[in-house]
Length: 176
Image 1 (cartoon, rainbow, N blue to C red):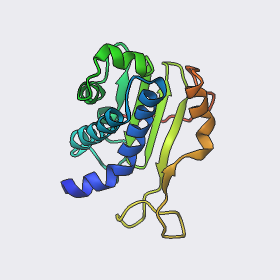
Image 2 (image 1 turned 135 degrees about the horizontal axis):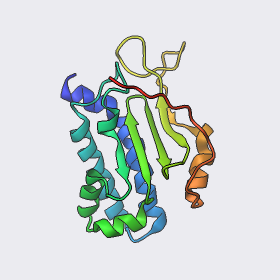
Image 3 (image 1 turned 120 degrees about the horizontal axis):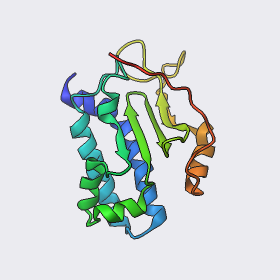
């Protein structure tokens, strides 16, 4: 896929992932508006560059592990890089972000899990079009990409500090 087209098609997914991570920095404080904007833009650029040859809208699960943002006993290096651009140390990022976070950034869907045993919640989803032009709502031809409102309780529980959101999500294991 052409690099510019790939970046354009992954923009909503990357924006959803970056917005999700940025909200933690805003909610927990210690970051001013300018720093937050720089962090967000830096992380968007870093992710777009990282994913450009690993984005397959025709096979959304291909490369999913590569595009996974993971914070556990190690800080995700891409998040760490964006944090360092605004002067945050890895230790400060650990204080601002969940200690156990998995964030999957896939074509047409962005989802997350807090904790190893947490449920998976969907942040963003859209439908691929039959013609390779992009996501559309079935039968309308209109763009169908939005943050998922039906999973708002997952986000609310997350902001309330629960480590395992209550919404469950069926997971399919794909191996090659």
